[in-house]
Image (cartoon, rainbow over all chains, first blue to last red; front, side, top):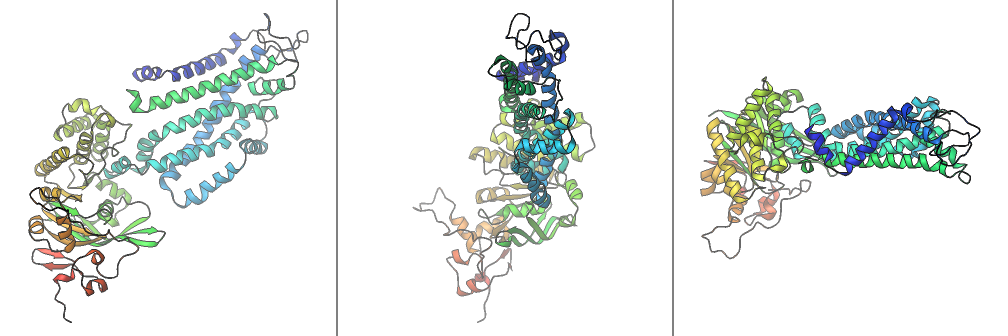
Length: 276
Length: 322
């Protein structure tokens, strides 16, 4: 509780946290918040601009955009958490161990595989993986997660490489502390700041990547609403109904901002020099 | 007095771009129980690498050869697991940089406890009590509060006290102190040295004190080895070393200490610097910088000779039959 208070005092982090909390709230209570069924088509009210009945307007199938944005939050939050979660579960341990032990496996196997993976544009890589795995939300998440993993390996490894030479690591070794404990208790907590920043940025990218894969038919299957797929569908209607792009776009913008502010706040909070 | 640590023909080599180079080249010495051994020399002459070889904490491209006998066991032959039982428990180390030797994310108390909990089968409360006792033993005021503080809240001198508390927490038989006072200012240096001396007398541990400060040696040590370019060039008890230094390098080191009563206009220096490890001279390693160098010095490396109470690696003390 005491540390929670300290975190809240970091200001911008608080705003970020509030945005993310609001997102979670909307996702959890989507059924109560949305005035309409997000997938119900109403051909009497096609492409209505925002009005009293449909506050965000309707799309080309007469679906209520506000309800779709509300339900889209569920997909986006899942996309952000699951893809980054998978990437961290794969990437962070690999980065920790290769960075700490170095040697042949690190230099000639793991890092070269990662170079090869990073040589492809991220989306192409994710596309290739989901083409192998097949379509569907779960496979899309796995594909994005695997695509993100190299950046987590790199950022973790980079941190470990500099931290393993710190005197306090040597000092811990000199009192007989075992490797595992040094890795997880002395190195990992000190490496966490950049990893968390990377995670929040990746969550933002994850939301976008899910949208792209969904658009290509490899992610969320229609008619399920996700912000990215709404944006992509609205793109062709830009000249007739520009408002249809505003709201999913705004939702993505706010949530990405929220994740970034949260990341900044966490970084400040995790640094004991600013914690006091 | 029995020998607690015996280093025999220690040779530590590093793989580098210039091939394998020996940074420690055939070092022998003994540390007896309750004794303080000073290891003196310029930067880059292998002092720290000797200590890291003993602890087996060398960077991964370095490998030690020879024998490091600690109470009869050769540390170089132990497995990593057996070594972890020795580190901190039997041999502990104090590092040069108190500002970076403590993990910034953990309280100092937890870091002292870590060493204790690792080696002793005791409860957390007992370990905490021991940690606070250790903080008191190293002269920390408000030990109970300091226990819960983070390293950045402490000054350099206090952090070094914490490091000493950490090193002493498990009553090691030998403490290796690698330039423990170099990063501290002079008044704090004196306090830390006094503290180490006091603790040593109380607990009877042996200390291997690595330093380039001959003043510290004179104050603290019983015996001294002088290292140059990875080799021992002189070994003597502290009194005879200061009264009658033999090796020209030792003499040079002593002449380059400023003296208040002396009215020298210039401070003497030793010209040049320690040769690079992959470009060692053929003969005596100090010959290129030595004012007394003879032709033989440049041709053949001298042996470490025993001269009554001294050991010295220099051709000046060899009767050469031509």
